[in-house]
Length: 267
View 1 (cartoon, one colour):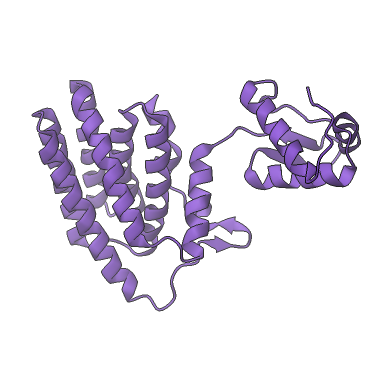
View 2 (cartoon, helix red, strand yellow):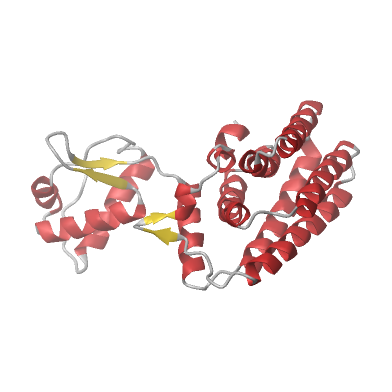
């Protein structure tokens, strides 16, 4: 399965071979890798090179290292959406991504989503979108803030799921995951909420009528409105939120079901 290596920076070559084995299907999620000494023998390298490679793979999320009698190094299910989420949260902390960047990216991605959905949406899809809006409004009336936010984002999750495009699903999932953090921590005003319900219903009405450009225009105005109101609220915060805490992403701790379920919704 693996080839002996004779090169500098050998740990990178080890990483490449293990990744290739996963991509080809030779290694699957749940498979246990050979021990460090055995890997060193198979690759023809030192144990330190193997240890460094496994550390890189663990940080990338491709493997998980367990201790104890039943321990070892195991291949994990690759979650491209989570990798994007980690990238966004890390770069937010570094100041390389701003809220306005997320808003702009979300607008262009969702414009593509609406364009695709407009060509293939069914009566069943329309009904599902309207039921999601109804549920969000019901949660709002019941003062269930968290559930309402969840349902409002689910609306966009349903839309992107209808494209059947894995990249779009992962990209929109990652962006809405980060935005959901702001909406949970900086609660939207009553006006934001009411405008959201109105925009969502208009988008569905236009899609049902085949007026894709109008649906895109409403979504653009909706995203700008929410972004402007959040920026105004966020500007009042003296301490910007830290998206990392005690080694775990706050996004992971505050994750909403709509984000974790995007792939399920699309299936």
